[in-house]
Each structure stands twice: as C-alpha cells, then as structure tokens.
Length: 174
Image (cartoon, rainbow, N blue to C red):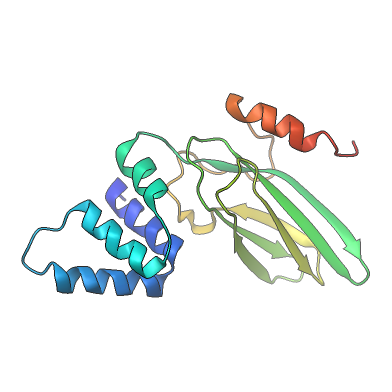
C-alpha cells in the first residue's frame, strides 16, 4: 500500500471505525465538489474523535520519521488460578504511536490491547485463566512499521532510549 493509504488506515484504527466513518461522511457532505485541505480533514476528524491529533498529522505528514516497535520483555506470574502477563515494548523508531499487541493463550483464545503513546517503553498487562503462548506486536500489519516486528528476540535499542531503559530496568530483580 502507499503511504497515503497507510496513514488513512492508521487514523481509522486510532480513532475507531465508527468515529472515522462519521468524519468521512461529513467531509464528503461538506466538501462535495470543492477542495478540502489537510487542515479541514484534521479539524473534522478531531471534532468526532474529541481529541487533538496534531502529533499524528505532524509526524506522518511533515517529517520523514518512522514507526517501529518490538517486544522487549514478557513476564508471567501466577496469581491464584489466574495468570498475569506483563508485556513491554521498545520504540525502535522515531514516532511514538499507539500500537496493537495481541496475545495468544495456550487454550487457543486471543486478546488484543493497544498501548498508549506516552513512553518509549509501553507496558500492557493481560490477565487470564490460561498462560500466554505467543505475543504479536502489530498483528495483521495495521501500522506502517519500517521493519517486520521482532517477536521474542533481542531488540536493538535506539540510543535516545537507552537511558530510559536503564532507568526502567534498574529496579528489576535480575
């Protein structure tokens, strides 16, 4: 797919299909037979999403920055009859982006969650009756990542992230 398609697909995933559809419908209604600027599209999308998307439009449309996340750590603990798995990702790229993470449990079921974009090392916790068998970062390739996500392999850490990683891992018992 082209970059344009990738950006539209990521925006839809970011704000949700229903919200995205409402914004697109308004764009078609308001700008039928007239030009629409990127700022117009952004304003309408933000109205329906009820949040500021400046960071997204700036990073994806005004810079050559890339997005790349990989699995950094997976820790599972048993608590009674449940398993709690904490998944930590590493931002190996230059854009902070919410990222989908899917876990497959040993019983065959799956669950997907999205990270936030506030840190270079986002964490998600999954709780279930079955242990996690597999973790997939960016399942289905929804995000336009620059490389195939690494799955349970050593992760190259961006130099700007090394200090934060060192601090985050300082209190780990190993």
